[in-house]
Image 1: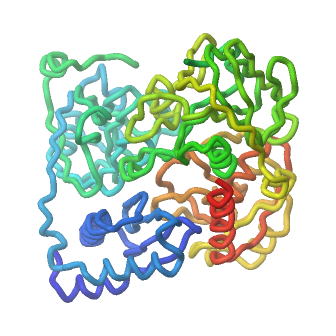
Image 2: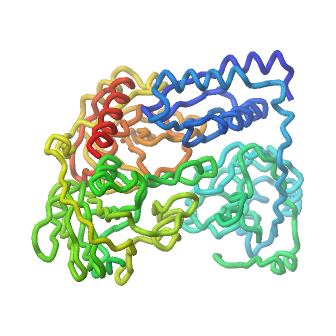
Image 3: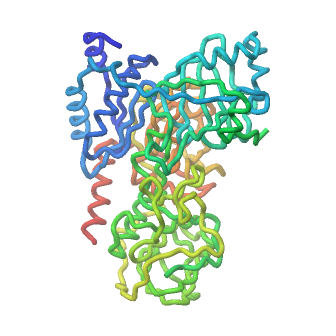
Length: 241
Length: 307
């Protein structure tokens, strides 16, 4: 949580620039931090109320605003954005009731083909890799790459590993993986170069549900180890390797 | 009340104006690669702006009507015929049960649109029928499938037909090779030499051009620029990866990315670019945001006033 002065100063440093005839970018900072992520969450929520906004894409330090050119011209959109920024109560940044998402994971050799390599690289045993990965609370900084793919950070420093030199052509659904300081769950079968530690049996996206995607930008995310039996009982499978 | 698909074509997709409001979940917008052509298609039939149409890439599509309707063909000239008779784009045609509509191959431009009176019928997914194959969303089946042989593409039959065609002056010029670009805040990261090279070179469309983006080949610019912190990507954004060959991101683009961007193709020029084929040459032309805005308003009001 930020003190008021710091947050007010941060708010005035938000730069609005036009990206195209249909989009503006709000740049909050050049540095990734929880305080910046809190501000972005706050602004994203506030802008949802603004008529004529087509899409909002929050990321680590920026928010892309796609607007209806029938509602705004280049001056009107900047004025409207400034108006919203001015009306925000920055003291509430960090107070947000952030959703905590708990994702059960089976960390096992059948679904975590890179467990051993990661352990070797980090000079830890496999149990320690699992313990470190599952006792950290992560923040969803950005959603993208594929629908529902959440970039979660930060992994403990000892777990920082490079991406695989040759990406896999198909990463199985629900795979839980790490790369550098990030971790993620693959919501669909895609190519991917991250190191795979395990798999969750739960669906990350369900377009028929009201929530659509399990993880949203700004959420806190935790992984909870489950046994092979629990994994299978909840519909988990060993497909893909 | 449908078209029966005799030949599915290379890539035939159901599209509306796109899936908006879900990019924060990583869901791309989709929608017609050539928005202006699409809007004219619906205007010609007096359909609502968002009525679903077929986007026909390259051609080789054959449809047989099971019921009467009125159609509009717009966009690229794919040598369309109706019962063997040539059917030029940018006008409406009366269709009777049993008529066969055939799109042969690209004569001029790459993507044609087939609009039908009242629009094609499909259940929207996340508010849109736009087909995004990569995300398994939209289309006639809701699962992102392209049109396939034997499919029935439903519409409400009608015998009301109004012959209409676009005034010659309103027809987009697909021969235009200049693609208009507005420069954004990351433009400052590129050297004066890179900027001059970018706006004064010819670029060739590579084989890697699809609905997601067009990869160009030619004068490399800004090689080995460090990446940026991943941020939201606007339609038309021109990414510069480390090899310096620009990539223009189009309707099925990924929602976020970390390559530096030298600028953004305007929404109107993006449609022209989408009509180009691998091997075609283009050049980028600097445009101010206010010119881009004026051009878009002009296009939109031309369509709306004509209705």
